[in-house]
Image 1 (cartoon, helix red, strand yellow):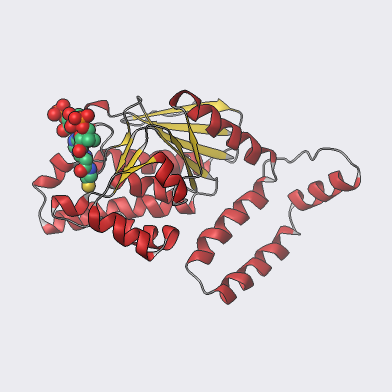
Image 2 (tube, rainbow, N blue to C red):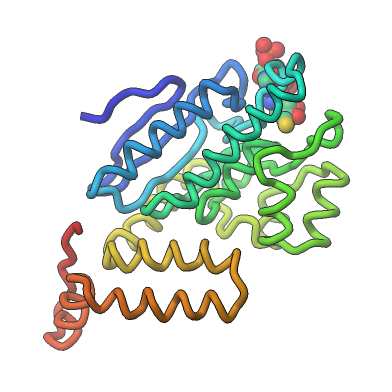
Length: 263
Ligand code: COA
């Protein structure tokens, strides 16, 4: 049975697919230290389960995915406390990127500040039509602190990141789609179904190959093209030592669906 985590609901909507629902309704799921810690513990638990093939992350209710880092908690922070808070958030974002299973953010409603940084650390984002994305930190007298300036510039380009972060503008789901910040826009009632459809497709593929591909994309983003391609060659070769490769290619030759097992 799955353990419980403060302010999170953990469910398994399909075999091998887990759904983490952030559940702190009184603060529109704002991220405080306790919630960041709970999220880290939940990801650690799921990552250690050999059967986890896909993780979906969403917010409870239809109003907010996450309305930011907790402004009430941040108001009284000293610079040293703020640094610790940033380290905690940064560590979670790195942990999600390093999690072996793909993580898909299902953004339902406000996705602001730290919430947007959380969504950005997931492997990709599906948004509901009522999603609102923003990095409004400069209006509060601070900078983003969970990696927003770095990931946004890498993912949507320098000019888009500059305009977005410096103006603090709110962006609709459709505009986020144009920026390729999110990859699909669905009605609020279809968002989970859309996430599960993606998860089902991923879960049908070879689990070790999916993990390798996720790692390659993340690691390659921090490397030169040449070094990234070298890494790909090594991982490509390594994949020929896996049961995934044996089964995947045997199934092709025998004209039958592959039956991949957990590794
Ligand atoms: N941190 C802490 N509490 C938050 C929060 C946050 N980031 N976002 C919302 N809340 C709390 C509100 O203080 C309020 O609590 P209260 O009922 O005890 O007063 C509750 O959540 C509901 O929010 P409210 O502002 O009443 O809802 P709304 O529909 O009028 O507005 C938002 C929703 C998201 C537009 C508004 O809450 C907001 O601007 N939040 C802050 C967003 C932000 O700056 N995030 C980035 C932080 S880096």
